Length: 635
Image 1 (tube, rainbow, N blue to C red):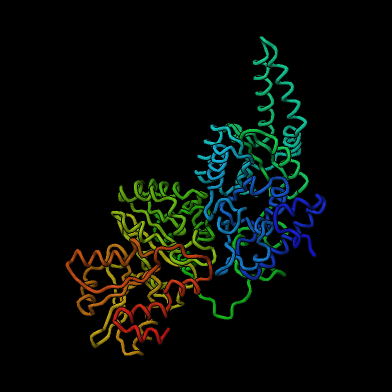
Image 2 (cartoon, helix red, strand yellow; image 1 turned 180 degrees about the vertical axis):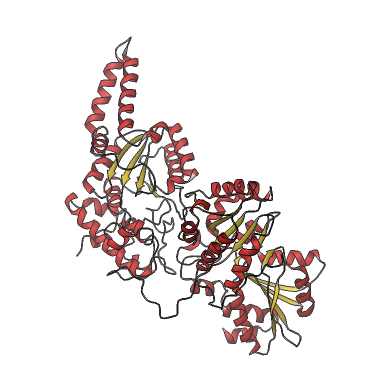
């Protein structure tokens, strides 16, 4: 039996002799590689924290000492040693383990996470809650250097320093943030100036000095300032010391003995502490070490060479690819165009723009709120900023979108990649809310392409609109249609009829975005049942084409709206409100996502589960026209 197979809880890990922990780390890496090569997932970040994870669980006693992981996508080793080893092969699959920390999975996941920079705030709240209840135990927050670029992390550090509660913040630094290693002297100081022996000596000297009636307190203050100044001078911890944290590090995050020594020392310290750990993202897998950005999130791959496993189907361009190419073309034509992203130049497709126009590209780090207001400032100066952020992450900047862009009617274009059902990353990453939270905002224009040509047209059109614009598109492949030679400037708020029938149609299906292709397939299936369907592409969720709405309402009498978004406040409700304002009564059904958080799983499975596949649209259409018996036969 392997060492990992003997570990069902952190207590089992702590029973192992210290000299076996290196072997445990190797087995964990092998397990992560094996499962990720089949399932895909966040590989490089998880490989980089294996020793750190083992050391934390070996020294601290989860769940008595809660460990809160920032983002959670690096918690695979944590899952393997907290009772989820047997189910680890199901990670990110429908009905299986989440790819992030999840409170319902384990008592060792005290706080769920899918977005960055939240761990210190959550850990401080948990620590304060334990204090108010009189419970013992240290609270540990693990945050990456990328997460430290988020303003929320600094707000939490500031509050924690003022409260002076017991809190351990482990800064996992893999080279993207924080100053580089400063040498052996810093490591030596960190290990020795935080040791139990040194702390006992410091306490006794302090007691002795304080007993001197005249000079004791002044002497204590002077020595304390001298030690702190010396340590800060020799380490990169001045920021944290300035926030009233004791700074420890940097320490080699792959030296298990050094980590154990540091964490044992930190256990005895009082007040807030930052432990600065240097790690190698992708550690133990050469391909990931060479290209950690590429292997941050991966599809199934071959362990031998890191190459993706071949798909039997022809590879189609993704919507992200089309956006990337179009941005470069637009940048050539318009010197006012600037591109902004929040730590996702590769994921959003802006790397090509950055390479071609480095002086007009900005990566602001994990700081979506700043990205939006920064773009607003550029717009004030006459530039046309394109802010490319995943739909789920733009939620974090809602206040800035409202006050800094829409209220001032500034021409900022928001490009929302991963809009709709995203897949294996689950509820924290599905982009199912943007039509609702953007649709309510005055001055906002919202477009959603049904294919790659429409995306190109919409991007060109967005630069002609003198106000805020949002263009949303899904994760994954476009349709692979032939591209138009010349982009079309769309008429604002103008939809299009895509499927028109000569006889009187029994209903109209009104779509927004990529669901149009699925709706057309459903219409063909319905035609085979003798039910003629008109299909329309709204193109614009805001403003809605009133003329087209009136036409299909009067011609068909029944409308089925289809959107890959939450129904509450979504496109369907916008259509209903618009028709009511026009005094038009029509029977309607809205198809989208109901009052639920969609779980993780592949996109095809999830769309079927929520009724947004061909079968779901067909069933909803049949029920709308009173053919539920046919619907049952098709199902």
